[in-house]
Length: 178
Ligand code: IMP
Ligand code: MG
Image (cartoon, rainbow, N blue to C red; front, side, top):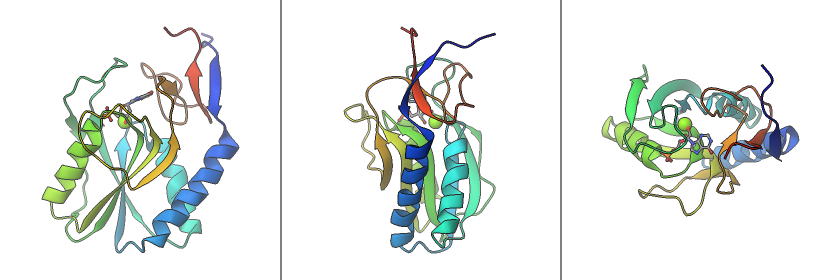
């Protein structure tokens, strides 16, 4: 079935260039025993590219996955965060880098940050590909931000609407969605 057209907001080259810069910014803080935790599902493409950019910046992170859900099939946050799949590693004494696709209300990342701090991580840093300004419901400051995102529902590069569009190599807006 053909999908509706998607207008490009951030193309592949722009994303790749920004990933290299982000990896350098992260390397500059000289993390110790770095554990990258990709918050699933939306961040999986970004995290895959970012860890390879981190390698190019001289870092050797371990990688974990934390599957959280606050959205289900809707395009508005339900406000509740559930752990669908937990990390397997012990985070005690580690420098953790939480990697997520979008920071919007902040509920998902505030929940994840508190969880890992409570488990004894030495430091919990947050890296988001996109930040939607003015949408915060809870206080959470990202340490590394890829791009500021307009207040639109975006898809692609791992991000979905109702499970579709994750495969797009760019970030865009579905035309005629509203
Ligand atoms: P928050 O808890 O409100 O900050 O929600 C962040 C999560 O909502 C992100 O990790 C995404 O999974 C999802 N999300 C927020 N805005 C968008 C969007 O425009 N497109 C796709 N997913 C989104
Ligand atoms: Mg997400």
